[in-house]
Length: 248
Image (cartoon, rainbow, N blue to C red; front, top):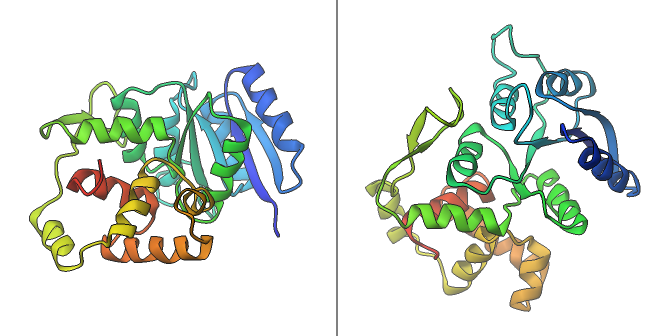
């Protein structure tokens, strides 16, 4: 099995050293470099081409949301953004559990979302899930998004263009076309159970354990859920499920 190549972008020295030291003890992880600010982080990613970038949301020169946006746009012709051959996946690491920060991270294109008080075993799980092309969403963050979608449609921060304090984007309910699609291809009771656990941030292995089924069966359910929701990945499926009221 190939190692997961990780770049660590975190401005707090103790936190960065602690995460790096812990990750270096795992044979399946290779820490390719670290940076203490966003600009150095972008240069590091351009040079090392990691599989996953662990990005602190509160960097001093640009926040992690802005870094994520720049990184996801790195194949454009914008000369201000470093060019990378393969855009890495981004795992946002944050102490901020407010709605604006969380939803802005979604909008910027981050792949997975973890609170900084996550255990190391859960961080490893998040890295593995992210490397597999899925998204790992911290349960605390999933609850924030869920509480937001229970409210009437409103404007929330969007970091794809400007800092989270100004630019906004609506996260209201899905349109009627999506509603009709759900009616045409309804999820089974078991698929809804799996979907609820996806929204809460559980991995396939954890879902299998909670529902007393095999990981292979979970993967089949996840595939069916993605197909029925016309979702590209677990994050998109979770967001659509929350917006449409399928779970909660």
